[in-house]
Amino acid sequence: MINRVVLIGRLTKDLELRYTQSGVAVARFNLAVNRQFKDKQTGQREADFISCQIWRQGAENLANYTHKGSLIGVEGRITTSNYENKEGQRVYRTYVTVENFSLLEPRQNGNQFNYQDNQANNYQTNQGYNPAQGQSAEPNTGQEPGMGNTPLPF
Image (cartoon, rainbow, N blue to C red; front, top):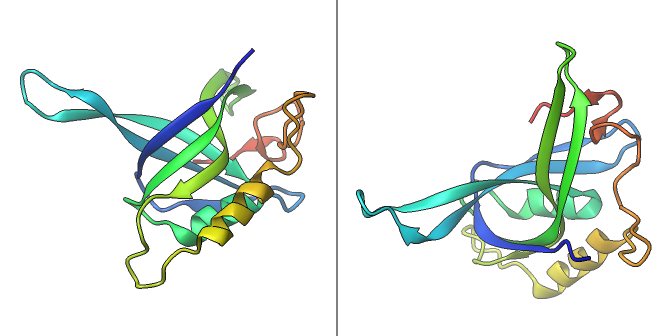
């Protein structure tokens, strides 16, 4: 079976880097991905807004090197989860768990992103994930990933 996603898009806002109770870095973000066709009535290109999350060193690197509007490429897998909210309702989420990312434009402050740093990030992001065994790099708590029983608020 194959569960592989590759997207190119722009960040809809700056990443908010969070840490779980055990100190694991995690960031959730939305990626605006343009559709290949234009709306017939307006002539405008529409976009899909894809929910994504990234863990560990990759989360820290992505937060440090990007900002709202940054053009990035991500590779990962579709993940689904559910949890019970404060009102006792079951909430279901579908998102992309990012395993690798690429910065697709130079930084605007004059500091160029080093290609070797990105390769190191790709290695770090993949640590702890073994596709052959189906093991996830995410903590397996049986709950929504985040801080204990409380889902992250973003």
